[in-house]
Length: 121
Image (cartoon, rainbow, N blue to C red; front, side, top):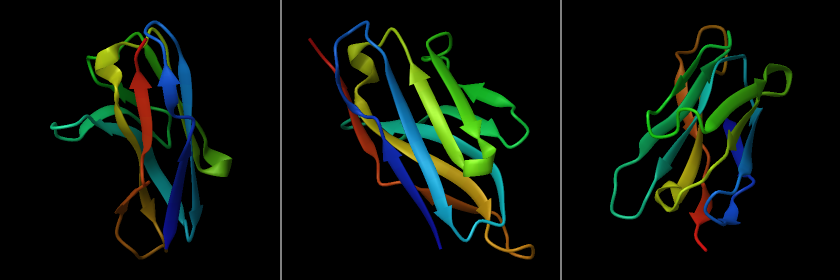
């Protein structure tokens, strides 16, 4: 079993910054990619940013230039630095990891329970 624990959410004023962290633990044989997704009220969950174990990144157009995703592969931890926050960034942010639990297992998607980010004055 794999657990993802997010931290760093909260209330931020427009134009402010925050840093989200997510630590993966448990039976991790290999980590292929980690990422952040978000879900605003009444909307579908959407990709924010992902990063592969090789360091390739992908960002949603809505956060390009404002977000930076990074990892500490040795600690199976992923970070999301977001700057110039806007009210439309308000959502529950979920951490995701694509992991093998053994050498022979398929790749599984694991999710954290989410952390609320609210951008408001």
